[in-house]
Amino acid sequence: MTARLEAERETWSRLRVTRETVAEVVAEMSGSDEAPIVERPVEPSAGDQPVRMVGAIMVPHWREGLSADALPDVHRDIVEVVADASTPMQAKQIVPRIGLPAVTAKVEGTRGKLKRLVERGWLREDQPGLFALAHRTAEARGRTP
Image (cartoon, rainbow, N blue to C red; front, side, top):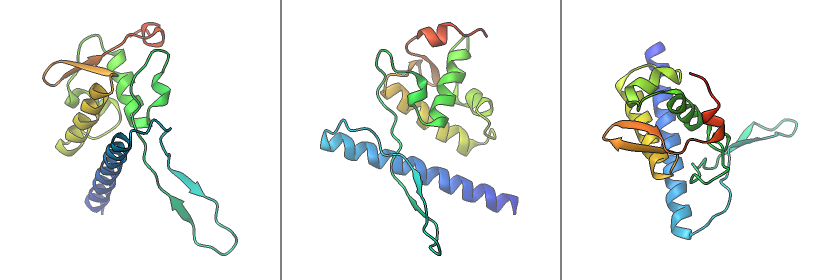
């Protein structure tokens, strides 16, 4: 039962990443700078079955004054872990710190998110596989390790 649950969670995670990627590609193709559509439940009326409207959660490009709070939860967690680190980190070091099991599938999924954060200017990858914060904001500088 646990193995099946883990497999379903992995499938759900992959679908979520795929949905984000498709939404980003569509937004880039349309040249739209609109705010991302977020997932939100729709209140059912009496007797109706619950319905969920699903949209894309996109990672915005970093710009001055934009905090990590603008990121989806898992991406924000990744940025916070990297910001707290004194040296660049690998995906396999980040995974357990964001509360995921250190299995290959989770490490690879996190690596994809790290690459997306690099593309969007939140992180930098000075050496292959080593990720560090791209911009030291006042918020990140104020933290104590």
